[in-house]
Length: 133
Image 1 (spheres, rainbow, N blue to C red):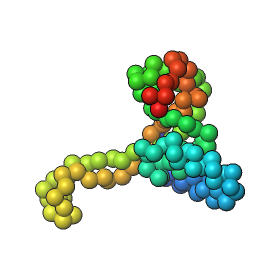
Image 2: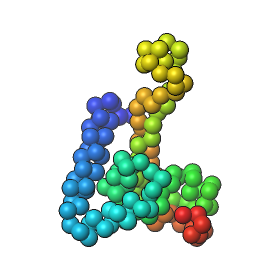
Image 3: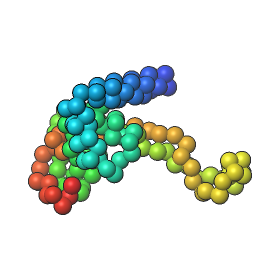
C-alpha cells in the first residue's frame, strides 16, 4: 500500500496533468473537444469533468467497474486503464463538531478519494441505448 507521501504526490500529478490539459484549450479545436466532453458529463462536477478530460479527452460515458456489469451488462476490457475521479468522503458530525463548526448540518465533507471509472470504449458487451446515456 502506498504511503501518504506517494499518495500526495500522485494526487498532485493528477491535478497538474488536468491543469496542463486545460491550458492546451487555447486551440479552438481543442476547446470544441473540451465543450463536447463537458456536455457529455453534465452530471459531474467541473473538477471531475476536468479530471476525465485530462485523462481521456475522447471519453463519452463513464461508470465504475461494477456499474458497467450490473446496470449495463457490460464488462471492462482486460488491461483497461482507469480514469480517476474525485468522490467526497462524508462524515456524520457529532453535536460537539456541529457546535464547533457553527452548523446544523448532520453531515460534512471531510475530504476526497479518487475512484476508478472506465469509459464505454473500454468495455464490451450489450449495446448501450440512447436512453441509457
